[in-house]
Length: 111
Image 1 (cartoon, rainbow, N blue to C red):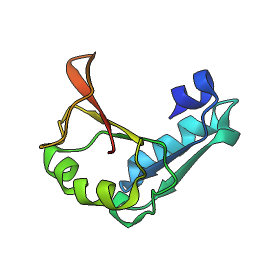
Image 2 (image 1 turned 120 degrees about the vertical axis):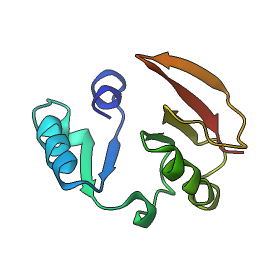
Image 3 (image 1 turned 180 degrees about the horizontal axis):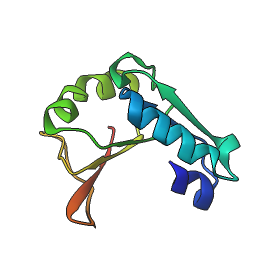
Image 4 (image 1 turned 180 degrees about the vertical axis):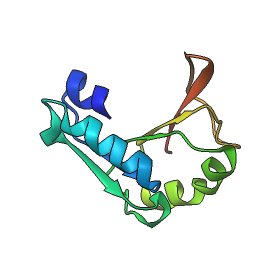
């Protein structure tokens, strides 16, 4: 989300359940000049309303990634892009596979 705000001027919201990762993310965001375009929420992604998102980036376990499929179908608009770092969304068409470090990230578009 920092790169999206800095390099592309995107308005971004991060959702983090883990207390330590939330505070680390909050600290990293507050160091940035573009911090007014970023917000970190300490909550569970399953409980947050994400219907206004145009791009969703997740870096979760395979199990949690699969559990999010129903939420994505229910809340996200047609054309919303989803990037899943490390894990494929079973049964969804991969638009693009991108080598990111030691693993792949997968791009999907909600239909």
